[in-house]
Image 1 (cartoon, rainbow, N blue to C red):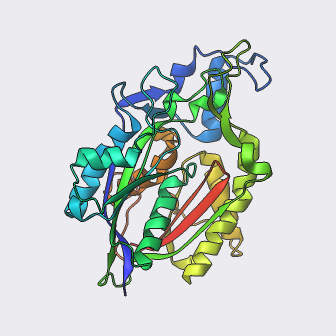
Image 2: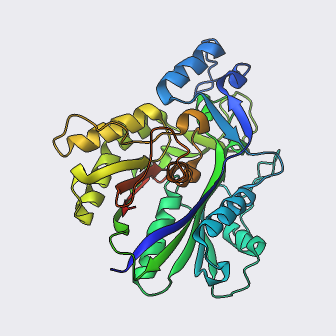
Length: 356
């Protein structure tokens, strides 16, 4: 059977390690501009208990999102052993474009995908390069789009990348700034006649854009007297949590049911790494939808403890780590059924069921 399969993966994990104690000198404020009286050490410890994050990675000063995307892409292309000139699409998911160190201005013209294509040296004009803005689920939405292009007969090979430098759009006076991180992940997808049972089995996506619109957005710093034309990533954590723990499990079930796969056959769930506790509740609620009160052990690989939330890069990076046996206690075997799922600004949700 002809299916979309992942033939190559790559990642770029920045070398700069930022531990929680690096935020010990920050002065945090509430959303209404009131100083938080709790000592920073207590703030960071409570943060660790809730999110599971102990450290995160920030991009080196000379690296942009497109530069990290390029590095991850080179590895993925090498892993797939394809000729880059045969790519039909290059799709780059991000949220803020290229932001230089010390700048607040987003640069996304030309597109990051065009920049990646240029630096890969691809001359084929039929290789279409474009960006996608879909919040944290952007990389997975790029995968869904590539699969649809393939099924429509418009392509047979695509490079899908997620890359972000969230560290350059954070408000250091906002406790939520500790969540965000940088990184890049890339995958080569091919539509193959001889795929057999391997490949994408089903997908689902949704956008909730009514009351959910401002759950994650851009806003001014929380510190009183801030420069009002400077904007930073902002998140209503409680509302995101309440939304995600109900809507994401339902979308995951919809995807699995559409694929005709039994939950008993599911081996791994690669979920967006946003908050350890939230992800655990999402998985528990997902299994409850099938009448199961016990979540299988080692079903959900996690990298958030040491990589933080790198938005569009979290899932492709996590998948590459497990595929290469670089994450202890998590491995993939031929034929394993896995589920990718993500949630983010929009609010957007998506999921893909895949047989490895």
